[in-house]
Length: 334
Image (tube, rainbow, N blue to C red):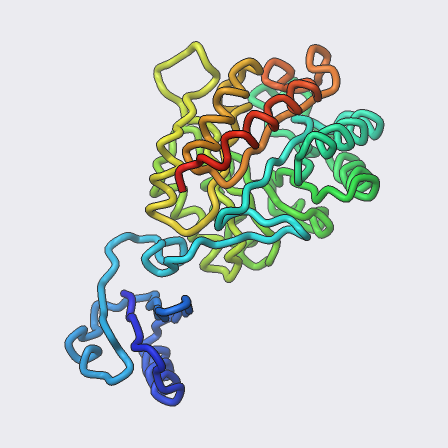
């Protein structure tokens, strides 16, 4: 349920209403806009009498919300959420590109790529330290060493770092990581999401291979219910009957998620298509559709990459993509 409060409401009345609601085991989420203040009520609101609430001097209107996600719901939070990572902002009209190798392979490789993507316009550095692979015989990442190398690249370039977590037990290793990525396979790892809700680090949450948008938002809700509102949603392609691309990039998810939620939405054209030549058209299309950012795989030698070389761009290709995206952004649908 949401309550829209009257302008210039009395603080004492608000305190009395809040105390009464909390006594009913109702959690309160306050959202103060320029002209409107919304009180989101989370919990079992079935016993609350809307007519009674409307008699209160402080309440302008009241409405029940049917969607099961509350914190992530735009009805609770009409203004776009802006996630701040150092000096970088994502959401609310702020666009940022995250770029780097699928897997961290060496210090030289990572630092070289970091310097090149920064020069081309990337705002954050991505790199896999722990790698979820379909085959148990494939390269699994450098693990702790990979995170250490990411921190060295951050020290050299100043770029905040983004890397994927695989298990709750790895969380202490991520203390200095700027953005924790939850991959498609872990989108419904609810115990992991609960733990991430206890942190205040930005979480980049990828859509599962066969997940609906509501399921994605319910996973975001797990994180936000724990108190962490710094969630960035990521569309990375879903599994369909099509076999020409690795996955099917659902660009309609961008405007749809913006209607459903206030959280930033970014696109991963690399994993979505699995083909480097498709990254540019999908990136520009995503920017035009109103995405808040991109996450793109870049490797200095894609043919010899230890992971996902077929979808990785060379640094000069990434620079070309970034130029094309920058040209489209002024005309984006927002």
